[in-house]
Length: 361
Image (cartoon, rainbow, N blue to C red):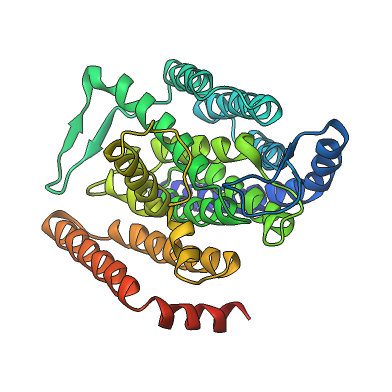
């Protein structure tokens, strides 16, 4: 009897692993096929990103790429998982895309967009997707109790705006989103959280396919529909995956995996508050802007951020193998290395530019 049970578990694990592969391929293929159609539609109805003071591109580029990413994600997720939380996440993501398309079409005021984001986050919570607890380094669990609602809403809304603010160069948001999603997929597979793995790998697949048309020079942009959707999907994937796992310091893992956009947004908020500017006011001092000010081309800046995101994603996965004080020490060492790396870059920007030029040429 025990032998049959073990064989059944092995079969289930193999089946789940194959579903991960199918999810990636289905999302990738769907997004790859639909992106040109979305480009044609955007040109037809006039939903375009036009040049401006903060824009890097010099001619109008069609939006609606985010719709193709979402459809690939939704089709793969719903085809390979009937988990109620996955269904709730796909429904919430659809609402995010609708909100984003409206914003891309008419450029709604920031406060209206924020209200829409909060409403969607609240709906996601009421649908049963929430951050109820996190683990700490000493083997215990911190239950949030009544704080789970505000923490959940804050996490979802913050991630939507984080990725939205990062989307400033061709291929940047899609590439970083795909790298982060793959890190979350690996962590979810390690802990056997298959619904989280399926939606994460679907997000990675659809984002990578979109890069075929979005990497510099981009022929289509994802728009707010895409960037807010990426943020929402990454936030909710970590909520049913990493944050529900038994990993030590579970909260640190998604922060590491998404460190580049998170810290870029934090620094932007601090910068604007110190200057007395509205938090959502635009500027050209994001991380990618600073890289270009140091002499890197947009393509080189994107490649360097990809490399940083990849290293941080690997670090996030590695953190899951440590427990107790070992996890704390690993996290502290990682933080120190990050600080030293940033300081080295500031002092040796020219040398790093030469390395990036060699890689990108």
